[in-house]
Length: 375
Image (spheres, rainbow, N blue to C red):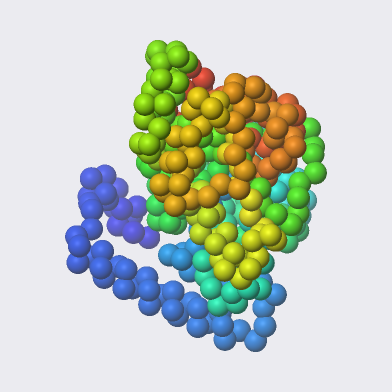
C-alpha cells in the first residue's frame, strides 16, 4: 500500500506532488522493462486461446463502464434502495448469472471483429483496439463481470474497479483514447480533462447490427469539430451562420472532442487499404450533420481534407431528423452533442452517445428520459 493511503496524517497535496522529469523518465524505463517481461512470459506459455493484449502505448484504448457494457439497471436500483452491502451480496449470489448486453456491448464486439481481421493481416502488429473495463464497482463484483465477459467471449483483460471512487483519474494512466459511460457526470468530467468521452443511451427498440463491419456515425459541430459555428447559430441565427461559413469556407474548423477517435479509425482503415482491402474494410465512418450542403457543407469537407482524414459517407440533412437516416446506416454507435438528436435516434433503435461539449450544453443537459442509474 502506498504512503498516500497508509499515512493518514500526510497531506493530500503530498500525494499529488508531480513527478520530476528524471522521475518520469525512470518510470517510463521501468514500465518498458515490465512490459517486455510480461510479453516474454505470455509468449512462453505453452498455449493460450486468447490473443495477447496489445502494448498500451501502441493500442487504441477504449474504456467502457460496467453499465455501458452491460444492462445493470436492476442492479443499480438495488444499490440505491438497499445500500452497498446488499448490492455486493446480490452480485456474489448471482455471479454465475451473465449480465445482459448494455448499450456499448455490440460496439465492443465490432471492435474485436476489427482486431481479428487486423491480426490476420498483421500478425505481429500491436496497433489494435484495447478494451478496458473502467468502473467504480467494488472488486467483489468483479467475479460476475469477469464471468459475463467470458460468457460472451469478449477479449477484455484490463480492468479498473475503484470501489466507489470515481475512475476518471485513471483514464490518463490507462492511455485512454475514448471513454464510454452511462454516467453523464463522469463523462462531463472526462471531457473537461481533454479525453474523448460520451454518455451511452440504450436504443428503445432492437435493430440488427452488421457483424462484419464496425460502423461509427459522427455529428459534425461540437463533436468532430469545435462549437465555433454552433455558437453563431445560437447567438445570431441561421442567416449569420450561413454568411460566416461561406466567408470562412477555406479556413479549417478547430478540432472537437471526437476528432482524435476519427483519426484513430482512419489509421486502421489505411492498414486495410495497404493490403488491397478497401472494398472489404471492416470499418466504415459516417458524418451525419444537420448542416446544409450548399450553404455550409464545403467548410466541413475542406476541414477534413486539411486534417488528412477521410469520411466514408457524408450526409447533410439541412435540419431534417437524423433518426430515419441512422436506421438505414445501422451504426454500432452514433455520437452527437444535441439531446434531441440523441432521443430521436433512440426512439428508432440507434444506440446513441451524447458528447457534452460546446454551447449546446447550455440549452440541453445530458440527461436521458430514462436516466435512472449511475455507475
